[in-house]
Structure formats: structure tokens, C-alpha cells
Length: 79
Image (spheres, rainbow, N blue to C red):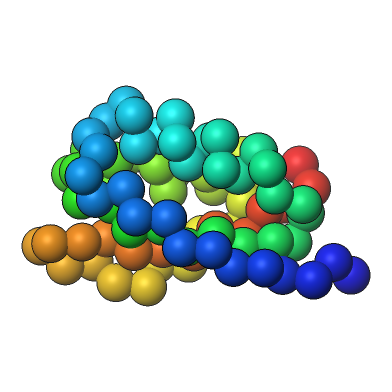
């Protein structure tokens, strides 16, 4: 089993579609089983990014969802 290495990426200053592009680029660099934690602000990204990642088979765990910030962890799948 690969070691999980968690990084935190703050995307609260960015808006859709740049948020999705940056998330996709970051996840592409991960090995299967590794995790990334993201923080986003953009309303559309809050809905679209987790749905997109789940459709690809990645595990998404929501940590917090407040007015100021939406934080979640993604675990890369083998799909």
C-alpha cells in the first residue's frame, strides 16, 4: 500500500473554471491512495468539483462547508 502524503491547497482566491483546472492538475500528480486537501470559496466550484471527482471514482470527504470556505479531502483512486 502506498504512503498517503497530504498537502493543503488553498484555492479560495480563484473562481470557476480555474478551480477545477487546478484541482485536476494537482490530482494528476498523485499516486493512487495519496490525498490532497483543498479549500475553495467559489459557489459553483463547491458543487461542481466534488461531483466531478466522484464521477472519476475518487473519494471525496467534506471537512467543512461555511460561508467563507469549503474544505475537502480527495483520495486518488485507481480508476
